[in-house]
Length: 141
Image 1: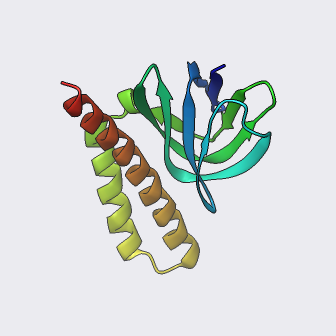
Image 2: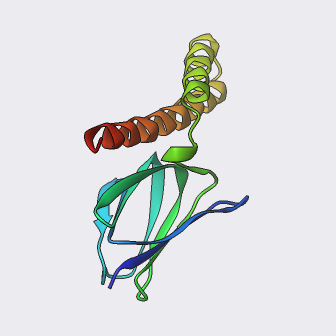
């Protein structure tokens, strides 16, 4: 029995798909969810969520949030922002990363530095998802 993966942000349902496996990065480490997993709620970090469906791995940049596994083989991710690997504008993500790195160097206030670091983490997660997706496509072509 496969898993039903739902990724939801305040703006939209990013993904609702039957999958075989989900791998996510919690704030305290990475974990995988397979069918019949015990119920679980975990805080997610800013990173890439991976899922496998029909033997193919896909990637989603997740900007924190919560992941819940329930007893009905559903995995629900609630996140402030999430982007499928196929939706990521790599050039824009590179610009965001460069801008965040430059801002971080110029800031002295702790809060401003922290905000710059969060922006940098978001850009890096988006770039990693796009890079992993690109590697997968290159490997299968």
